[in-house]
Image (tube, rainbow, N blue to C red):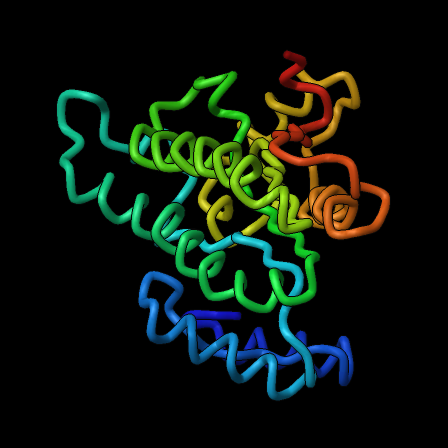
Length: 219
């Protein structure tokens, strides 16, 4: 699924082959999400049984440019809550009929290690992700009897995504120096953990938040 990046999404789908379908939809719009799932189910010939909620409302990880507590306004929070929480709720609810029919499902929400290590005042972003963690844990209890697991994978700053492209190189180096692995996690390394929760190896794990940040946060 993509919102604006049609060229990149289509190029990735072409690279990955016929097992991949790129579909445009705004996940904050339930009607578009229903259309997304219908198109995917028609294409693949079966209901969707795994959802990764990775949507991020327009955001740049540049601490110097972020509003502090005395200036940030509620619309910034609303935008992040709509992207992270409303978007996830829409995709989960759209997926549930198919998952329940199969008595199997994997829901993986993307969080942040800023819960435990709020070193930068990303107030709106962190609050929305904290709410998504709460939804992860309550949904795990609610949907477990249907054979559906719900987990979160939380990263630190990743090198490099669209959102972290504005991060100064010195910040990456500083973070790397504080991790036991002396490196900043890459999107590929982060995706490995997501694949674990999508795989049979995680079948007895639900309601958990796995931090993948090179060991920066260890609690």
